[in-house]
Image (cartoon, rainbow over all chains, first blue to last red; front, side, top):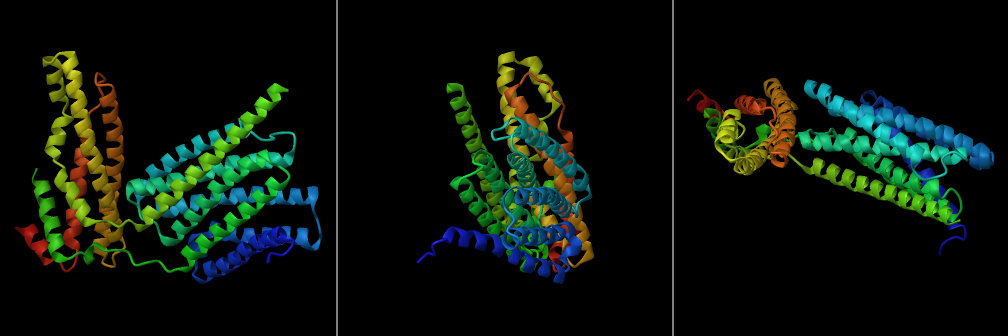
Length: 256
Length: 191
């Protein structure tokens, strides 16, 4: 049987669990020395834990609610958005690390995509629905919506680039991208609706939903960062006769 | 009053449109991510791609002199129809070459992590030229599609694509030569 205040219990569970998992993730990142390669992501994880401790402390221990809590929430949210951009830049660097050519050309293309998405994000913040100016609180959600659009667009571009060019991801970078991709795209949907429904049951339901999504996202990070990198499939593992056919085909091709 | 209701409904529609965009993005992220992760460089696929490509035929299809000859000797209507057909055929070639480049890049990437430094170095070269080839095929595909839509338009020729393809194949060949435990490969190269 469900307890009487099950929405509150569920809300607390969804709020606390991802941050406990993030604590475990931080330890894993440190022990496997992944913090050297993914420094910004490591900082982001630590920041998310610190943010949780601050907000949870304000809400549960000090009983801070209303406007003061809102100020703290929005300030921490804005810094979190900025750090996510850093994480995206970090996974992009990791993806292009092995190719000098791609470091230049693909990064230039990504810069163009970023510019385009930023223009769209600004236009969205100015013209799209929602309470854009009257309440600062709703305004922050409008900013978050624009940022979520830019970030999910960037992550989508990275995944499409890698697919079109046949690039291989390293397991941690792939996990970070996938988790962040899920989080930012659902954050876009959440912010779009949140700007519209800023109070009432709808807002509470949306809060539950986004904290649930955050748990899914952290679980994806855990799955990909805890498991070891699989051995790459090497061309030397190809049977001799197959290589012979391959070689013959290529020689025929080169005759032209 | 009516204007207010209309503004609210417009705002709601826009919000739900954004939600739809977000879910489409999520669907693409998950799909592309899962496909990218499970995909591996398939040699059989690469072989098939090489078999299907006749680089001389492609060279002929994008030859500027050939096109000038057709333009001079055919009626405008007939020329447009033939130009469309040629551009479409060349597009299919470029598309296949792009697919082969992707497979080459995957093979090159895998080889790059080989403990043998020679294989790793060759793998890096394969991946590098495959990336170049892939980008060139994308550019060529766009150009050829424009020619299909606007056959009268005289665009620049596409020779670097052919050169890049041959360069990529040559690098791939070198990778095969460096693979240990493949004496047949070295024998056939000497022959």
